[in-house]
Amino acid sequence: MREPSAWSSAWNCDVHGHVHPLRSAHSPTAGGLEGLLRSAAVPAWLPWPLPTAWLVTGFAGAGDERTGTKGCVVALSGPNPVGGPGEMLLVSEELGVGLGARFAGLDGPDPGSGFASGPSHALVRFGNHEFPLWHVESPGRAAFAGEMMGNWLWLILWPDTAGMLLVDPLELRDLRDPGQDLDLPFGAPSPRLP
Image (cartoon, rainbow, N blue to C red; front, side, top):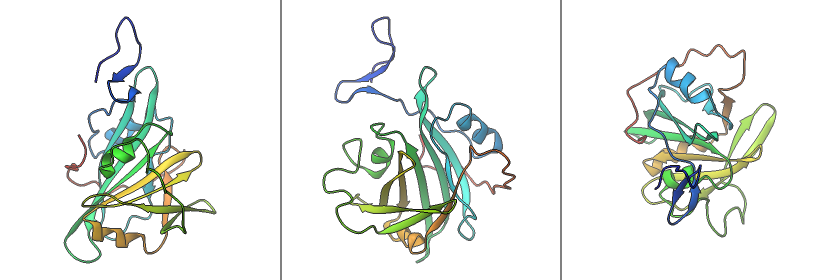
């Protein structure tokens, strides 16, 4: 990847062209959340209430000072419903950013051909609306993607059995919305974030 220069104000990749760089993770603290939200152009989704005994373990964003944050990641960890530890990343991004696909272990910027060709596999709720998610084949993890309010929403879970958390619809909140007084439980930084 090449940094902006006198010839181009964008970050460039020889394979993908103009890209939004993934910045270093923000700490799992109120200050880290503020850092993510400072220039967020897309929602920062959080399941609320959190699944039982789950913790917020970090934040990350894709974008730069020129474009703002075009992709937001909220990391969580807690007990896998079928035993052992589990991890989850919620990714919201503008079309073409490719952040969710990267964490899902895919080569391209989106879920690929054949996506959403059948019935959905999971649901999330925001406000009074339900949004469908489809399972995306992904090595060593459970990945689900869908469109939500004009952006991609990805839920990526490790191990793949942690996908059982989506048996019932997750209620989501956009952490950018004003007037939320959430007492977020923070845990150790996620090893899934850069």
